[in-house]
Length: 242
Image (cartoon, helix red, strand yellow):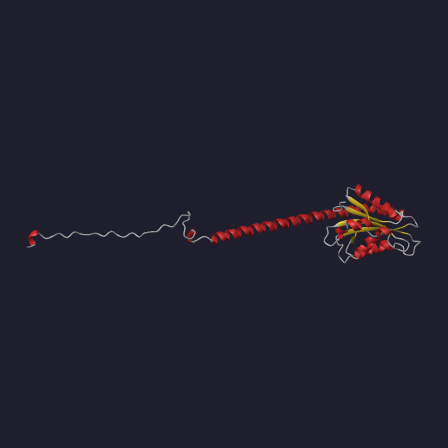
């Protein structure tokens, strides 16, 4: 199941009413061209809660859940509620959500579970994009559900679209930063190599003990000026006596 990039529609139901309404939400969202995931809260707890952890990419979700007679969550939403209770402040700041609650005013704790779920989400930093909707089975669920179904899909799509643009911008910025760091590393490496080459060269651009061409240095012998000898004429032979 691929959850990333999709709008999530979660349901928790005791009699099946919440599941059916969640299916209608999913159908309307899909008809608007938005990829959506429809899943029971019990399975969502196991497969997708990692997307809601701190630092996760933005996520949009619609939650349709009922409340039992004493205000407790339906059985397939118990684990999800326990998970929500353990979330710290700000841990769900990437989540934008709306809640549709189903209940019956004949019971003392009317809408007990949907109200607590909404409160826990907000306490964990999630952002509500619509006021919590409360449908009363005693007077007819459709009185609240139908108007909500007319409004919610459009708001969900708008929120999801904005989040996708934010994700794309984050990716672009991250790529630019990575490219900049790589360019900086390459420049530093080039400067270091250039500096090392300069340091290994002798005076006048020659390497120690060698000409620029790489041959051995020639020994220079100083030139000695030529010595001139002048001939002295000999005296006549008569000057010598035996």
